[in-house]
Image (cartoon, rainbow, N blue to C red; front, side, top):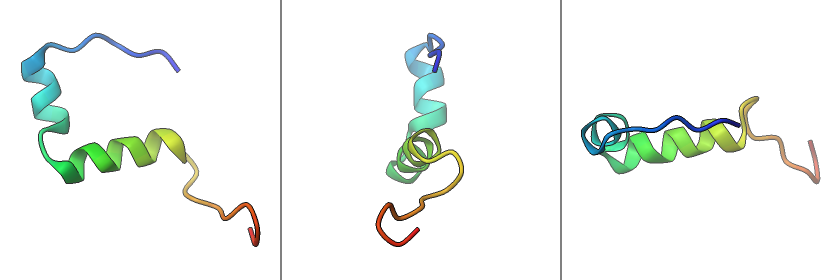
Amino acid sequence: MKMTELSLLEWQRRFGTEEACAGALTRVRWPDGFICPVCA
């Protein structure tokens, strides 16, 4: 995955809340949604 450079202001706009940051991390980690590796 290629990361783009962000200014501090743009970073704060995108990830300024805990919910926004958690959502972004979730989308990067599980782009197709979370699927349990044990029970699928």
